[in-house]
Length: 292
Image (cartoon, rainbow, N blue to C red; front, side, top):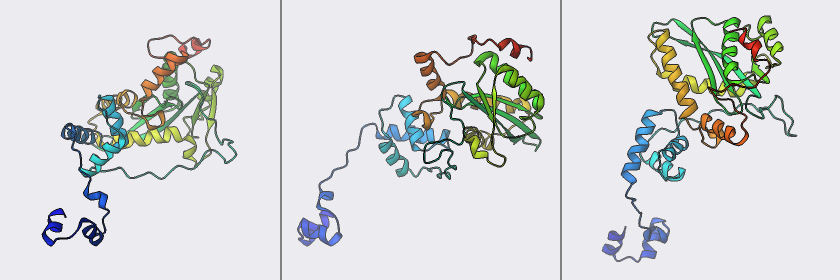
């Protein structure tokens, strides 16, 4: 505009009035930072590697890598490069009432509430796979993903028993009303350990929201983008994604910490999070060992 203004002899005030621009726009000189190109390449690389991440989670990964960048600058580069911002998901139905009362038990500490569910998948030849996913609702950690062609109540008990020997016995287990979760043997075994069961209302998956959210991430970021040649290949790739979820993927509900990092912080401050390689002090673990 400056060249045209001088050519036609217009004042800056007059030219800005004709174009509908504020005069201050003619005084701002954009500052191109020396690390702009390197940061742009880093953002594009991360966006290519983690296709389902938005700019906020990419910003958290950049900070982990040592970049001093805020989400506003990352968003500017993100949109300038035409990167895809994942579509906002429809918010889940509320589980708390206006007066603060709760429709379900909130997790208050690690090991307070675990939740588990089944997820279906398929190999490249169309043969079905079944996954049992189990998470700690407080730390958001994925505690286990068992992959098999068939899974029943006995396999559920074995998975829980193996995990309890390492992580301790939870106070409650949340699940839907699937036949594997309401089986008499499973309920009797959990009762002997002192673990309560929290069954959601039939047809209300949002009441198991933590596990449903995790299952959605598992499907979007692993199952839908992976090619499983056989059962062993599926177990290997899903285990690698589980490790990435726990140790590398920033979680927005944890202040963009990873679940493993959040759990380590709790362990350092309270000493209440059992970790692999330690022996939980729980009196009823001998009952768990009898199942394995």
